[in-house]
Length: 173
Image (tube, rainbow, N blue to C red; front, side, top):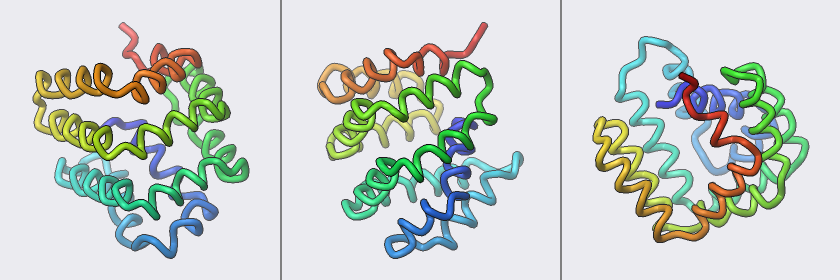
């Protein structure tokens, strides 16, 4: 699992406003245990798979998906989350690009459009499974299908590109 994604989830979970907004929808203890295990550098792949299953279950549940998206729309949740992610970024440009994208209502609108599509979510989960299985061909194929068949994914990618997020996430050689 991407180290920055794991850290971002841990940061989000550390915000009382975020946990409080989801308290009535999910088992807080299960998430806390998974994130604590994930923070151990020697964790196994099964922990990552468990977290992905939990994320999938949450995002496939309309109430949880809506709660997360609504929380991210609130400045008092979004801004501390973005600020907490800043020191975790590998490069200063990463945090600036992520902060810029997070503050853009158009990006948040496109994230909502992508996550509201059951077909897109399904392709994303298959791509993640391909990544865990180290099936690069399957991962590339799923990514291509996402871009070719779903305009919401193309719009989100373009919006992230405008803010420099894609450039900053590429490994520097």
